[in-house]
Length: 508
Ligand code: NAI
Image 1 (cartoon, rainbow, N blue to C red):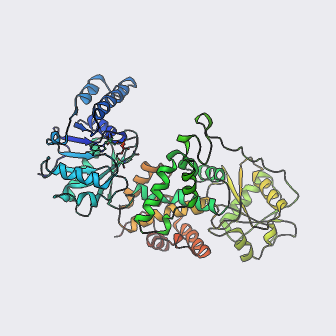
Image 2: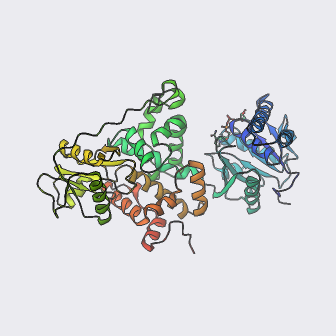
Image 3: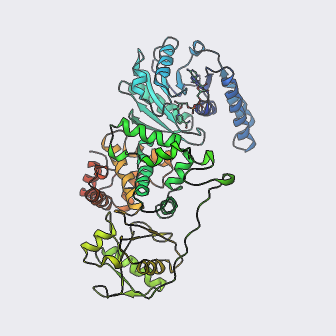
């Protein structure tokens, strides 16, 4: 009889009661499920059970739970001393050390204890669920059940189906996740599942920009927060997750996808990891953290306006109008001629292209050319880019004009795709390829990324908001500029952009 996750007498076993196991035990007990806790380390399961009880009490203190519900939840926790005591379990969730051989050995042992149709789930982040299941006589009842830290707050769980996982096992885990108050997303067992796969674009592209010497980390963090709407910039995030985790994840996913260029890591993080600059937890990463607070450089004040008028390229009619309206409202001096006057600043608004190529393509003087990123909202921060030969007073005149209404301006060196265009296009492209590979449905990709990574949109929704055709143009332009297959557009994106349909459109 396949497991019915809604049964009132359902028994869940949690093995490994560290950071993850105790969180899983907590949400299960609160979901009305009896939980057996086991840990190989003496006293660890008792300690975890006491911890969960304290967390449940805290919910009562905060008025989120009444006394009787809390008492019942605590009564559902039972510490057991050995794997042999887990026989009554309908579902086992393993959250032990991240080692394939040890997990395989445990699953083999579990099979000799639990009944043949009990579900064996693993919380692994980076191992192949299929490889863990391969150690079992009944691999059809093995699946991934990947939670996020801290479990009670991160309401997402990825249900990963291994090559031989039966539908009933995955369906039962989906139902179980809902019963525990979590949102399940279903995916094929593949490196990084949905969330850690979709998250490969943000940091790796930011590291490429850093590696090209285009700007400083703080510039990227500010631009990604304030123009693209991310809660944290890429380097703030790397400092939070710490390089001993994030650099290793970057390498591991890159290798597991056989050196897929879209996931290519950077030697910058490898060197910083070797130097011990792990991030916030050691007091120094890309930023220093005296007293736990990031020490970030102050905003560079805008220069005072020079005497050059601003001529705005008409190559993109929408951008021309938006920038003209914005600068006129701010009272900047504009050159409205059909071609720029001899002293005017030439302001261009490329998509995916650098300022140098844009100036040459449009027959403009590269010494007087600057580029503005118009893909994102211009109301909170603006990104201005120079060519290698832009005159300093031209750059300053453009900076002053763009900052005239009080909006800060980030000035960067030449980059095909500025900062936000190239990072967001990379994220959208990877999300599209997850859909293309049928790793998950568009809906689950969106849910996974929003809940698991906290991005302002899922990758497909991000692409739809900015326009699939524009994302495609950025990627194709970058690919031809760099000659790097990293930027090759996913067929999923290409086809939907050409058809003019949403990136969430599934195959009919
Ligand atoms: P942890 O180190 O906090 O806890 C692991 C626990 O497992 C320890 O209490 C340890 O004594 C116990 N243990 C080790 N080997 C055992 C065995 N053979 N039998 C029984 N107990 C054993 O580790 P954490 O962070 O809770 O991770 C557990 C699993 O969850 C790993 O597979 C990890 O990759 C995965 N995971 C971790 C996340 C995180 O952010 N920490 C997020 C998602 C998944």
